[in-house]
Image (cartoon, rainbow, N blue to C red):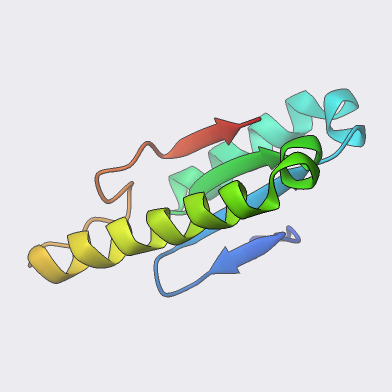
Length: 95
């Protein structure tokens, strides 16, 4: 999308979940620029460290499920469904 490979993109809610391994520490500026482009195009970006996924995959799965449920609820209760966050921060970092 927009010339990028997204880790886990949900087009229904325009949300992208990114998994950041060690290599992302070296590419922080590139990731920030990429995330800005995605956000400008209405994509919510939520990042998880690979470490947090390995340490507690059930918690990460729960957070992803909860995020999607919030987005669904916001879409169901709003006639004007904004694509710039749906009541969530447009970028969230976990772990």
